[in-house]
Image (tube, rainbow, N blue to C red; front, side, top):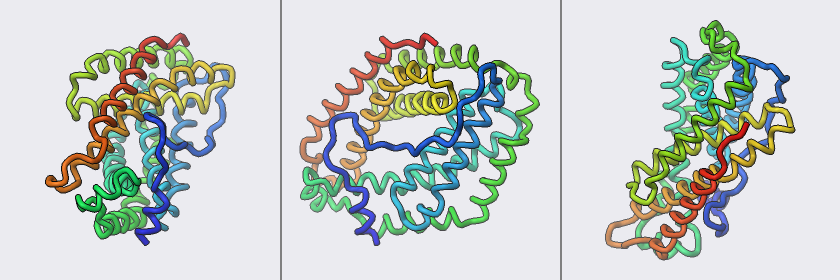
Length: 303
């Protein structure tokens, strides 16, 4: 079974910073002008929960892409909660956040293993990976079974039910921040997130792996907020959000590819040295990340 999985996730070579399409068609509909933040958040959160539920059967069946899509849905939901923090943070959220972190980490272990296996399967790294002992099919099989068991558990069912109840009737709905109008709130919040991301990325060249990882997570959160807002905003405003989305997506992808490359290096036997072309590939990815940051800095929100 794992051989089939490896075949499904092995990808052809791609340009630096480019990944295959990740998103399914949005199920949320544009909200009306004058919508408040609570109504906008509900539309986004319902869509995220629908995406999570839609991937469950695929993950249980061993579909690698379904793991990825559920992780994206979770990340989108958490990004939306953070973006609408003035309305959404309440006494119930910390426990839900903790349970979502459990699920996200469970999916993350197998996702990391799948991505590493896909890299090791590429012609560029195949011989090196075989010498380094990178591909451990038994460990990946165990991780996939663990994820399938988690999604068939009462814990997962309770989490999904609790999230649905929280989105529809949670304590957050009584908070005053929820009645703020979406448009002025969105403009202020996006400008703040954008400025903070650019500021945090100024020292990219001198960052170690941990700081780059935190920058990548910040970029990913900003990217997903732009996407969920694009799903619900009027069509005439999507072009502006897409202009902001392009450079932050490139930044996140370049840093993500770099993280994958470094993980491949570290899972191999120490005696095998670096993967072929490691230094050149790392340099290209850092260059791509710097270019994306520059474009991002030159494209401040004007919403």
